[in-house]
Length: 32
Image (cartoon, rainbow, N blue to C red; front, side):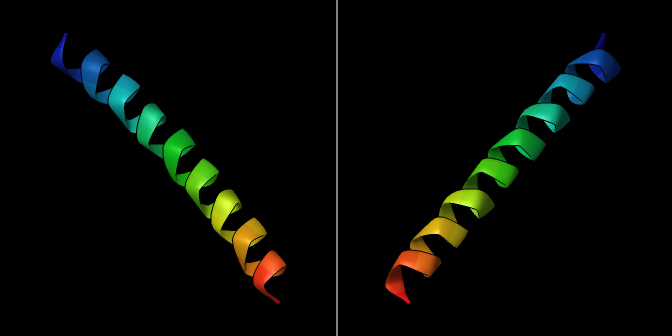
């Protein structure tokens, strides 16, 4: 049960990080 919860959390963090990086790139391009 603990491992399954950890895997779900890890996936959620990865998706959040990718979305954050993508948003940052868009902002950076707009700034240039």
